[in-house]
Image (tube, rainbow, N blue to C red):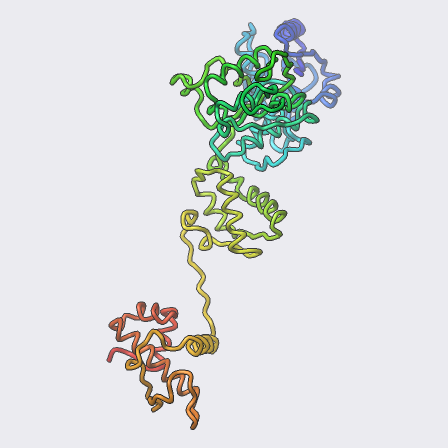
Length: 480
């Protein structure tokens, strides 16, 4: 609604008549009735002209959520106020006035913290708060109220069927069936029977009559996924159904009325296919009544945290397990290009839950291609007693298979055959001394084999470099 507040009656009447003539509701209002009208009217645009009692600047500042259009050059200084959209000058020019009205409507639609057209509507699986997703939800809410054909465009894995289901759920056909058909997954010679059904004996193997997807979707929505993969001969038959709103089963003569809403989707560029003669132009315009571009995951990377929560919830419902991602792991995922889009993210989530059930996933835990952030990997320091105990258990459980008999000699004097590894001499041993000498021998061998390159020696001993350096200091082991 446009309210015209102007004491210049001739000017106000002229503008009101012009706006109403082009279908824009407009109403003149007096200064005394202005506040009452403002409080009882939503989404108001005010055209402000000459005033006798009220102050222009105060009126504008009192309603920051209302866009104002000014009449008259004398009000030009007020253009600096944020909610003043522009100035209308006499004589009124249709194109200029319409453009200013459009900008004022945009001001109302994009108000911060304002519930958008999708508020209160339940969107199934359409997760995200980025501008791109909000735009998709807005388009869905607008077209769902009609029976217009919808064409959903977007890369594979972006969730085009989710968009189609939401159009159906928010439409007046929501109580009817939603029937999806993947046109690329059905051989061309079977697609006609799949869509329109067939009568008994229509072809070899048709032992009984069968309903097609159009008939199954009666009163509801038929979703034709990957419409770009439909053979040309089937495109002609589909166009006929869209034009005449009726069809016949294969082998039948009875016309069946098609009370079906068509939603199509494709990842292909249909306009290029038209140029190449692979898609019918007339069918394209029949389907492309209301296009919806579904954004790729790379374009809506800020939605990844919300998508992770939703995907984790689904995995938990199926398997009972879940996982959590650190903030830096999420930041790394945001940088990824996501050629497989949401489908790729869903696969990654399932893989991480299998690998790290009920644990926290960091950047270093992600597969290499998802590690886009350089982070210092945590390497735990364990008490020496724990390491010695672990080494002792490992040695005594597996033996010295990696070393030949001649190379493993100990200063403790236990060199006879009766004292092979794991056999306790009758006279007994000093265990602590024995293990220390064993450790010295193994470290010395590792260092000598690798020309005292500590990093290589640590690698074959299976210890951290810093741990080996401490051991060398402890036992005074060096090249000299």
